[in-house]
Image 1 (spheres, one colour):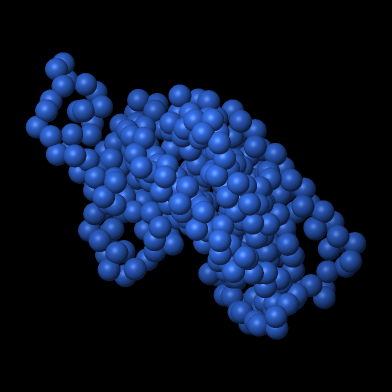
Image 2 (image 1 turned 30 degrees about the vertical axis):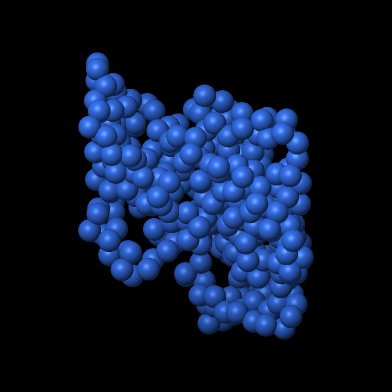
Length: 334
């Protein structure tokens, strides 16, 4: 049933995809103002102003450890989204043989999403967070609910002991989710959870149920998306095929409807006193524009050296992320 839903869904998207393909507003100018604000002007003459203090800040500590994933909260590149639209519309109206091959690649959450979006772990995380944040995915959706049963396995299995109090296939309750996370940590079973940014897991572990409910009332969608994404990965190895299909369809829907006119993602590189507009392409992070604080006081040669250094850092980050992804690709969801 889920497969037919996907085919119909993609078919409907194919009919009106031309209407969704708008050119994103490209940045024409960026200026680091004396008011500690970043002024951004777009090609359509619209402008936005960002508080530097409120933007994501990156320091050398973020990329000094070459064996770790570096995560930047950036928007998806428009070309990446459009390529996914073309590829997925074609792939879902293919032959029955292709559908059978696809089914083999959808046995786990990781393989299902990687088959759809490609890329590495940063694409996996970025798209999941965006899907939660956009409201396309919910841990309490009907397809995520566990059927009620008084049946108990004999002998008692480890998975039953760990999940018997779960109402859904992912632990919705914060205390239950944190308990499972800590148990995975103790048993060295974190898998992909170990690759998450420390800020993500810290937010998840320090938010109790009362605080989570407060975030719901305040409609803090970004914070909730991060916590729910961690919860989903906590329960990922307990998901059934129906749940994986639902999550895959939700991510696909979110990406297909991705708003190409979202505001640009700007990262502050504190070591270089620079604001960097970045996007996530199929190959990794891409620098779109760089502006320096007190730009008029920096000699052209020194500015070029900073730019080359930052471009080298992003290249190194992309290469490291790819290596970590390839190393961990077969280590967990098998």
